[in-house]
Length: 234
Image (cartoon, rainbow, N blue to C red; front, side, top):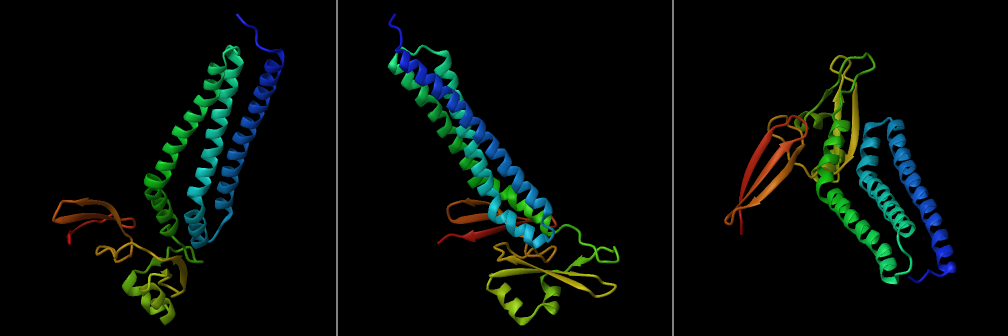
């Protein structure tokens, strides 16, 4: 059996150590980045600010952290394969480098699909918990969240117009003893008005094309009410 060139062995050993170091850096960077993001969430006090921050950044943070971990895994696997296998076969050596890339591509694609297709609904549930968490007045008594019909009395004409244009959505919390109100501003809300609780929190859950008709199923993220709507296709 031919012995591998000494310089090639030395180069691959150096590449192995470098790969392991890079993998450690990627894992550390991904974990530190996510922990920093989580820490920022904990220190944000305003619920509308926290809502906007998570809505804007969460999926990107998870995707970036996932990329780092997947890349680290591929690099680490490459380092193990180079260390434990015969170096005399150039084809085998090439496969050792290509296979981890295939692994990274498949895992990365699966994570990307999950974050784009499935995670938004999970994130929306998390955002709903932030938005509708019980709020207490300075006296310690729970405040009441006004519905779409009640809140207009506390909003300016400009605010009402912004809601009508779906540019922004306002929540009005009322202390019924002192009549003190807290108004929170959120980005435009694509949800429908829930006929049960009167909040604009009726979210589309599924849509089924049945040929002549399309059936849309909705669920309220505030009260849990479920609605079904049938639309005639053109």
